[in-house]
Length: 98
Image (cartoon, rainbow, N blue to C red; front, side):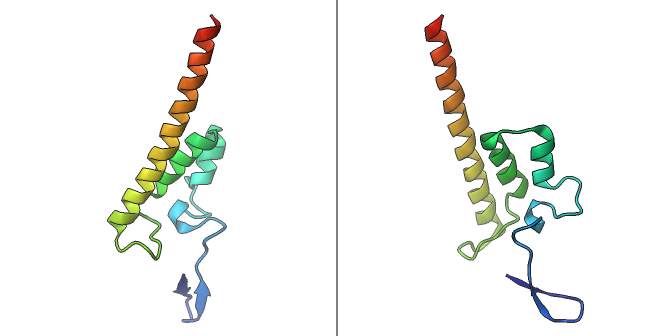
C-alpha cells in the first residue's frame, strides 16, 4: 500500500510500526499503548485490538469498509468466545475440586 508524500514521491504506508488503523504513533490512545497500560492478556488484548480497528483496515480482498468492519468484529468475537471457553473450563475444574 502506497501513499504520496509532500513532494509527490511514492512512499510505502506504515503497516508495521504504529499503523494508522491502530491509532498511529503520536496518538496517546494507540491500541497497543492501551493494551499494555491495562495489562490485558492475549485473548482480551486481541478482542480490544480488533474492535478498536474495526472497519479501518481494508485488505485487498474486501470491497468496502462494511466488509472490513464485519471481518474485524468476527475476529474479536472468535477471541472472546475462545477466552470464555477457557474461563468456563477453569471454573468447572475448580468446582469439581471442591
